[in-house]
View 1 (cartoon, rainbow, N blue to C red):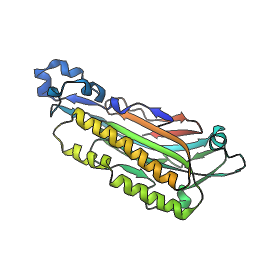
View 2 (cartoon, rainbow, N blue to C red):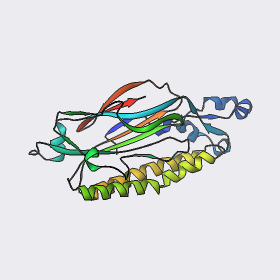
View 3 (tube, rainbow, N blue to C red):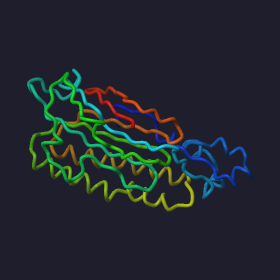
View 4 (cartoon, rainbow, N blue to C red):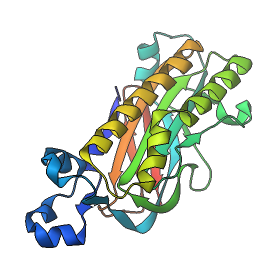
Length: 248
């Protein structure tokens, strides 16, 4: 369960197709996943489509700060410096595969971050890109898991490879491909995506925990495609950290 949560996948944006609205004007008010799910099945097959944003949108992580709750949460009081890393995956419903950081091709020294409680680690430029800028469908979903490393670089590399493989083979990745070729979006499809998204988060958590690493914080954010996209930095505080995301 996410410790930091922004928005909901239920607010991802859909609309009835124009010919459908002409016959059933009341369907014009159905604009979210949750509202679509409330409709009787006779109105769902091939009648609704995902809303595409009018602009291009991207998200990066700008900075990480460990707060005073970090050491108490992990029950470690003697570490002057902690080895921190994060795993992030993001997607929309345009048909592109899940975008993963750090992936399986990386230098561990660039990914594992030595930090002290109270310090801020800022990333240069716009930050580390989590979701490449593009027009989006439905909305952007972002999950970030923050972990403390057990400092075994070999095990860390193995865990990242397993994570990348799990995402590649996940039901979520397969559904994202399928929905891009569908003629419409249905309540059934929406529920399958929700379930696949939850399951993938569980799988990734199990992989990283089995690596001997300690869980710090978990961010889960959803940004609907029909809402205004403001170019800004946003900070979110969890039990043990403050994450700042850059919306660009």
